Amino acid sequence: MVVEENHVEFKVKHHKALHGQEHKVFWDGEIATCGCKFFEFQGLPCCHVLCLFLHKDCFEIPFIYFLPRWCHEDLQCVEDFINSNKEESKGTNPIEENVELVHCPPISKTKGRPKQKRMKGGKELAKQVKTCSLCKCPGHNISTCLENENKDVLNSAHKRKKIASEEGDLNPIFALKY
Image (tube, rainbow, N blue to C red; front, side):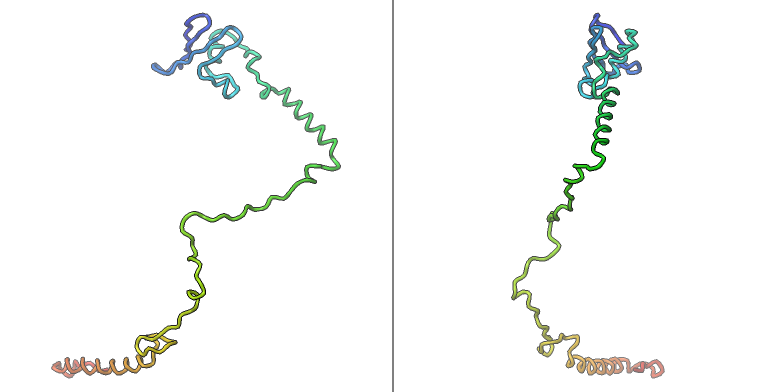
C-alpha cells in the first residue's frame, strides 16, 4: 500500500500487515530512493521502489537503476575480449608455464593433551628386571615362581584334608571324594 505524503515523499507498507514497518521512499520523477537502502547495498531496486513505480504508472524502470555489472552488453564485451585472447594464444599458454604445484600444508600440533607421553631420559628408558616377591629372585614374578608351585600343591592337599575332616560327621554316602 502506497500513501503519498507530499509530491516527493511516499510511505510504502505491506498490504496485509496492519502494524507493519513503513518505508519512506523519495521520488522526484526520475530517481527514487528508499529508506531500506537495498539498492545502495545490493545494486537492485527494492520492492518498495518497484511498488511506487506501479502506483505512479511508471512501467519502465529508469536507466539509472541499470548498473554496469548487470548489463548484458558489457558482459558480451568481456566475453568477446576473453575469446579473442584465447585465439591469439592457442599455441602456448604463459599461465601454464609459470604454474607452481601446490603441496599439502605442514602438519600442525593439535590442541589439548598430547597423545604420547613425555620424553624420557636414558635411565627411565632402561627396562627394569622383574623380581619375585616370594623368593626375591630376578627374572620372574610370584605367579611364575617355582617355589610357589610347590607350595600350591601342598596347600591344596592340606585344604582337602581339612575340608574332609570338617565334613566327617556326614553320612559316608555323601562324603566328597577328591
